[in-house]
Image: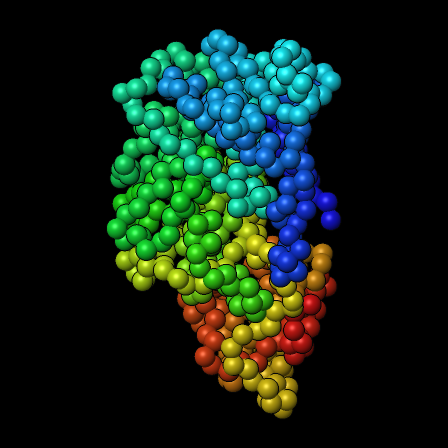
Length: 482
């Protein structure tokens, strides 16, 4: 299946076309298929009718040259990676403070671009870029690196230049600020000036720009030294690293690097149980649910015991708005848990929606229908009696008038004494209207919280409980997830 990925800015668009690795596609059911084999890359620049095109070699060279030249431009320190015409297909040359020449050494120049070399059978393509166009190109590259489902093995390592060699003025930096620069251009600026500070304890939340810059700090406190780090970090290290606060929360490490060095949890039943634990940790901690202009989407790494060990922003808004989420506060604390070493990790997609609804789902979906984990009561006579007791208990406690218009479906588990031991919503309306059911109050009266973790050691009987808009209740023995 042909896959396309598009990264658009006002003055630049990157279009990648390719295929999925068949072996990987057979192993996982991707909600969003991975583009792992690049067939064609196109770079559209505003003001030019024809795109720059090429294969993987062209695209990798473009990425290296763009990043190297952006570093050079911001630091005024020459970077050979931006001008290596002997081994690179793409290079940059500075014309003046607001003009930059992009040169592509290709086998042929498409129509629409001016060729200024007459002594070669295959003249290079030369394009003049403004600073605004340059940094839109930088941010398009940033969007590519933030997309973990496109060429995930491709990474980029930038070497910091020494401060004493830098000659950039404040005026030059101010000039680039209004140029629609994105996450990666800020990251390049931080690397270029070698201004990444050591962690400082600051109670207030950082400003969005400070949060973005901190995404490349790759902090390594002693308590988290066991977490692997990436050998080559892309310019958009999109893993947000929260500013340390007085509660001594650990820094987030490179989630990609961690996932490359540990096994991945893929069992659907285990993922289903972990999905609920993740939801139960984040849902009560997300206290301020207003003010989001766009959905914030994150990729989470979760250990087998439910500990959230890392997260990575999927979209730019998530990278800038991490302070509006509880993620920095729900990360596991090494003081209360052994460090992560070679433990298996599960991946989840977490969305903080503008409507205040939390969405949690496995990153790759479920490869097959999950099952309920834990010991179960299977005796049909006992189950029949517990079914009736549960119906009576829930029916008596349900006194509110429904405002929902669709059935609310839940899985409810009880122990041998018909005491509710666990429950979970099965459809979105059940999440949205759970407060109109008696389940949270019943659960809270027993455990002191309506998000308590289930007890998997005690045998339980499981039922499907349906609250209908006409105030009717249906309870049937559990037959499995639909």
